Length: 388
Image (tube, rainbow, N blue to C red):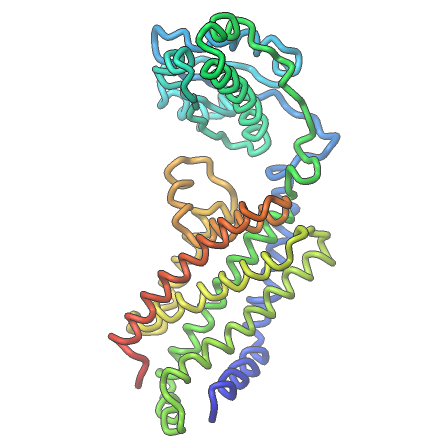
């Protein structure tokens, strides 16, 4: 018996199991349909949809006049901005967070105490932006504040080149011609709820294929069939790899079904970079299988392995915003340590037709996760082994 025989038998067994067909092929399509329809208003705006006014709380250090000193009042008086932004003032960051939680504000900005000084010195400036509950309002507010800061930084760059006299008159009369209002759903600048949840559910269920692989590996030991496999002229490592290979093929078929199914049934546009999309899917599948290896080797029973696997997958999906983006700093930072985050952001950039370098950055980081898992899996196999 050769390794490819084990792969073939594993593939046939999995395809014949109804629970596999339901959980890995039908369930993701149903979830994408439900989430895509139910949360469409939180992901995108139509071209003709009205944009609601955003109430933003600005937290500025007491005694500072940072905003008035860099043309903020003139910026707010522009017709485009005055229709979109309503400004509130807060005394500290905790007040802004409380206002966001209560719904009194839609967005918050914390201005550092040295903001005005940095402007006058020609240094680069940035504000802390705290997101609220409404995704579309977050997008509007972020666009407005970033456009203002971009202009301030542009003036600073001019100051560094032309001298400090440039800044003496520029801040009091900040030009407003750079403020350009455009559709938030223009092609290449936004994505639909179906696109977002098709990508997030694809990643989550590809990772769940590792749970199936772990259960298959554990069942060989539990059902005492590993002893019979070991009696054949094939090493334990090849048996191990054969089981992983069969599950990887099923996961690959699952990825094809979800991508083609969402394209034909839901009209999801997966972008114009199919090679990068295939590469990301392959890396997610590899990560799922390596997780299955590590968890199977380190778990004492199939029940504990399944519990650990589900907690990890659901936790990573939650932190990465796979169910819904959570605008909390600590959660967003934790999400950057998950496989889901880099895979999802990579797919979103493929959908938005981003630059090759931007996509490859996410591919490389996802590859780094796989290297780490491979090293952990290799060490675990050498120390624990896969035996009766």
